[in-house]
Length: 420
Image (cartoon, rainbow, N blue to C red; front, side, top):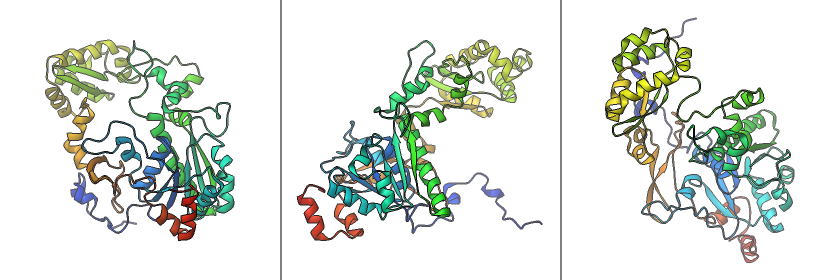
């Protein structure tokens, strides 16, 4: 059967208006209507909740009384706000509840009755000891999805140990392979294990909600930093288990050549080449087309064997040229290459700006700042940074009133120090 399909030939390379031509403006994102309780600290847990908030969920950050949010330096220039706080706690509402007090636990469970998801990242067993662990929460709401993030997981020999991002990078084997070939093991410059755990937690929460919607069953989801970095290690755990002598490659790539970071007259570029047809094109750019048919370099496997030679060929060609000229020449040949930018360079890049990866956002101190925008784009339900991070107790009365807490009860809880 032949379908009468719309002619989209003119949209092969679309502009932003084309992509969003069917966009709605009446919802904050595809997760509108979902409520998430975010009882987390530091980075992995807040990042998981931030993803769901960015995608339109009503994320309620539950902080302890007196919490001032992340105060990590530096502050965003021209503001009194931490870059970290505004990165992971934007698009959320907030309430303060002392979960360590019985009245606080009861108040939290009242909130649980209205929630789809709880996300927490305390050491395993901590919230259960306070009366708000998975078993207590599922008693209140049997179809609840309860996501626990930790360094090592809810079970296993290491599960009771504290864990942070660099510890997972070190324990997993990832750190041993990172850094220059002759240098020491090196951690990632960003919170890589935290960020990956946050991504896995958000995806797992949505997967568990899909199951809940199909069956009515809630469940406990266990995400660890260690498991997340191992999962995203490109099969190296398998190679480690089977005795492969894994090596550190620096900016080179184990499976292809020439691929490396190359120094130019005024900076660095990074080029990646794996296709044999691209090798032929590259030799033409480099002015040595005869090497395109040289039997030593015909296939990627051949070039990996002769890595030092092909790498030196590119390095010598780049050395006395400007990085802009190098990128222009190799890019014109259809080969993957990029300037090695700083984050400041990226923040000025027209493509980054066109993709809305910086969004000017009003902050609670009255200033504004360019906050990093969501990575995924939704053509029908666009998402973005709707507002900056709230004060930890900014919405306490509003949120608790939504679940039936009276003004008199709020006053008593405040007098007892359960809420701010």
